[in-house]
Length: 243
Image (cartoon, rainbow, N blue to C red; front, side, top):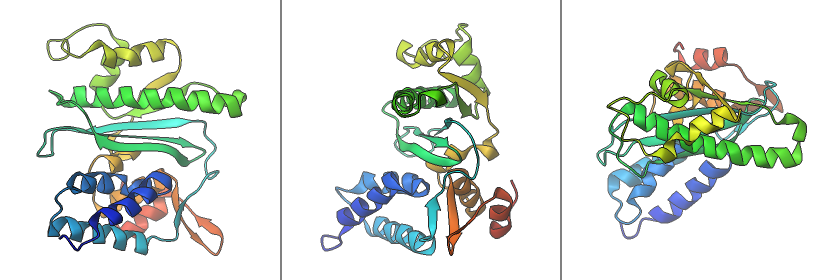
């Protein structure tokens, strides 16, 4: 493995994951954990990501297919990893295309799925505030409530209710910052079914049909001779699966 350019390959993939390909963000983030001591399995996984990019080289972030203001999705994968840290992911879209996304390991070991989702929502809200500041300088008329989708009902209750439960009373006050943002009308936290959670692709490995659907949800469309091919129904048909 000393002769294998693992670090250079991860650097190249990370550039794509940060700039234009949010669909590989989780894979690249996971593979970057092994930079100091990669194995043969990790190198095979890196080559598989490159093969995936080669097979989808004509996919690009596309804007304007849908007319929406800033919209966000937040999700977290529970302690399914060996390190027991949850994986958080969020994505923000404007007019059907992703403009900001994140897939990373949380810095603390959460004690429940609800807590992991709550922490992920807090990080998404911080990103939302920064995007509001940026968009406010460029397009002041577009600043409105940002709809933030979450697929955990407990998070929605915890974010708007001051009642403490034995399972959540230990949560640090910094993570309750989301409540203030709801009061300030910065975000509108709404429930989103798990099958429609676009940020799911940023937190875990998924089946092929889900990868296609969530990639479309992020605004990654296949272009052919300058014509944009879009639509969730077409993605499902190509994958041979349902929603």
